[in-house]
Image (spheres, rainbow, N blue to C red):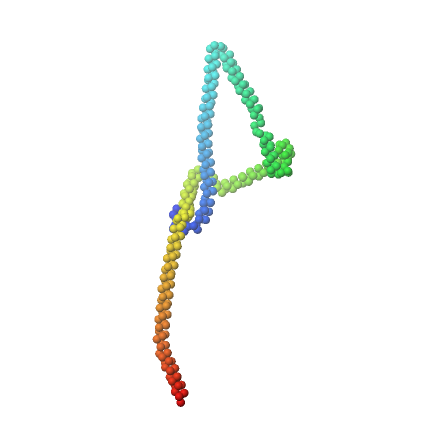
Amino acid sequence: MSGRHSGQTRPGLRITALPGTLRLLARLAPRQINDEIAFAKIELKRKGVQLGVAAAFFAVALVFLVFLVIGLIVAAIMGLATIMPAWLAALLVSAAFLLIALIGGLIGLGRFKKAMPLVPEETIRGIRHDIGVAKEGSAFNPAVLDPASPEAKAAKAAKEEAAAKAKAEKAAKAAEHDKEFPHASEPELARRLGQRRQHLTEVRDELGTELDVKTQARYLAAAARDAAQQGQAMAVRGKDAAARKLAGLSESTGGLQDRWKPLAALAAAGTVLAVLLRRLLRTF
């Protein structure tokens, strides 16, 4: 089995793994069901053999029960033979059995004739007529309800053809199924079922972890805290960098002021000198 389904859940947000887990379940479930069905068939076959053995013992018991009835009949005949000839006793017992059989048979035959036919033919015919009208409307031909009519024979032939086609398709699907899932022995099925059950258990546990709202909320909260801490750290680093840049800019501005002070004083002195010279020239 892969590390993904080793039964150990790695920390972190697992919602993205949910589609893959569902696909894995969809692939494993049909195989597990097919193996379960095959295993059930083998088990039923084994139980059928056991039932066959039990039925054989029941049959033996029934045979001996018949022998018991025969023995009782013989005992009755021999008992009557003490007061009459043996042949007459046997004849009387046989006649009594024949009379009972005839009475029971006649009663059963009469009740059977009263119950015939065993299906409600008129009701079935009416239901088929109603269904035909519901399907085809006025185009429905009631003649198809008569088994001897040509329409009924044609409909029966079409139905048989459709049934044969469906049977062929079913056989093809069965062959494809047997090709995809070949027959395995009972130990092999038991081994595969055990392994797949373990695999499904691990997948189910992982799926439960992926769908656990509390666990996912904890993962999201932890991720949010990590992002917030990283943002705070970046803000502090940016603030320090900005402070360093401002300090450097202030230092560079102070140096320029120191260098330009003499020049500014010289320019001011020159300006004052020019003004004085101009006023002096105006006085003359």
